[in-house]
Image (cartoon, rainbow, N blue to C red):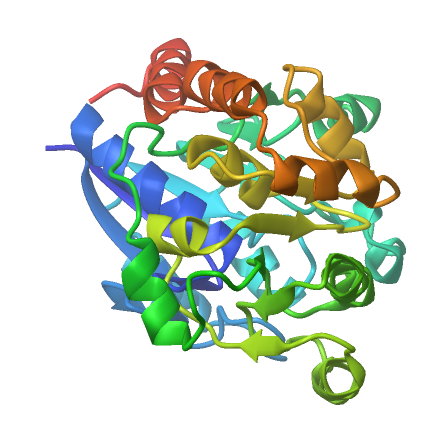
Length: 342
């Protein structure tokens, strides 16, 4: 049986890249690959020290080479895209040169101001295929002379409904509490101040799911401490339960490579307030009806009298364009075109 490997900084965790990587792993297994995972952190099959975020020296080249020696197809999730460990990216690129590999790109450096000076990523090799998660990034790759394929993130669009009572009991909130969930890590681009302001304006309880990263701990503590609304800062697993428990999803990010929560909100029939980051506008072209942070009067009116037609429309769009079946078909087409089907 052909063996495939998912390679990244960390895997099996709750961050967005880990979630997408887990879905790709499952789909590649369904297609016929025997899958293994390779990373420096998380629940992985092959731990390779030095692959992790902000590790100064990178992995031992021989150790990484051994970890992928029996691999027929490597899928590199963002490690050769965002410069969080350039020595690791260089080692991975050198080791995989001339071998079948999909470089799955979520965050190229030029899309972040603090990484704009980095020009060596992404690496390229004629043997590889590049996959990006939006048209905007595909156009930017083309401007840099790299051909790529757009495969939007996929979701279990037909999964079971969540348990509202169970999750609200876990959070310690009553059924009549207006609960606004912000299902993100706490980092600057997620725009925590705007999310809190939305909850304050709507007189809702603000529920932040993720922990602080990128040195945001002190800022977050101050923001939550000064919030003029009830605050819950309790990470839980990303399941339908979080959407069942919430009355509203807030997602006022200033930048996202994709942004899973608005699509998840559509799947599980929750209204969503979405910031005007570029890829959100691209996704909205499919027909999603989201609310603007600048039009909270419309949100309040919806909460008072829900528009079931809006929820029906959003769910139908998610099921048509963002299902796991659609991602699987796109992957099969990519593998077939490269001659890599098992």
